[in-house]
Image 1: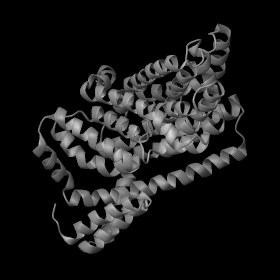
Image 2: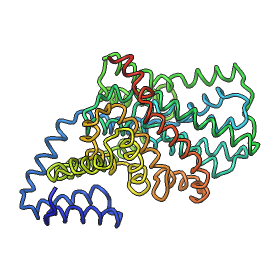
Image 3: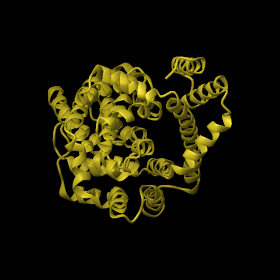
Length: 430
């Protein structure tokens, strides 16, 4: 890594786009172009690198398919079926609707792999019901914000697809590795909800009625089968993760049109258009990130980062703590896509050199970034839930902070007990 003019332009340009809050894709692309011009390198090289990488990254095709699935599920009100099932299952416990919120998110996460889809779909329904039954508005929103983070940890997961593309880790192992951490997150959040509910005397849930539960289960079965079909298809070898994305999209249309009859042709067209817009933004981000990564590799920044961190300590447990702290801080100021596509490649060589399992590291870093979605000042989930519910951001943040601490405890557990992540992949895939 040399401190020549092109590199200085690169560093200063990247700092400027972060400070000025320029759209990350355009910012990375502009910074890369300025670097290439200053270095006297033909921009055609960058274009060739980007196109070559995109053509070979078959797994990334799954991303727009899962985005489409999430939008179909939300538009067709499948989230209502999930909520009714979770509500019927919880029974008469204090703070029951808070537990319903978490369980609903866990179930919904097995369909979409998106925290934003969870928060803006089933999460908003849950906030409405919690407030209606006497829960504080800030607490209701905080539970929704933090429970939505389960989505990208429990399979399928859109961030894990990006991580697999960057690291070469097995997407099947990553999906399976996220199961126990996702359940652990749910349990940890529910313990805190139970504590607060008893302290504040929130209302009891409805009594458990077997008939009501069976009816809700029967209605929700088509939706509940989604993760079974997806994960069963992947781990049986019938479909690849990319094909599973197509299967999920097809299945979502089938149950929305034929089973629940809650999606019309006009709504489907709106979903297709919305998905195309989202895919266009994601494609621009990924393409810009490839150009950015080319410069990062050329300037040997990962090696410099590795030498810097090894200069502090060569103990991998201490380094994992440092990495977690750095990424938690980054999550407070930078969006998840930037962290994933720009900063992950910088630390991967160090992770490999220390012999840290890529599946373990992938699940750890995805959970870390999900916590970033809930942290001020730029936590995306905070803004989404505040915008939809009209609850003041400050009120949500105040109630969210203790729940963030709960998630950080889970993060530390999976960081230092790799078996939590690796148990299922080691048991079933090796």
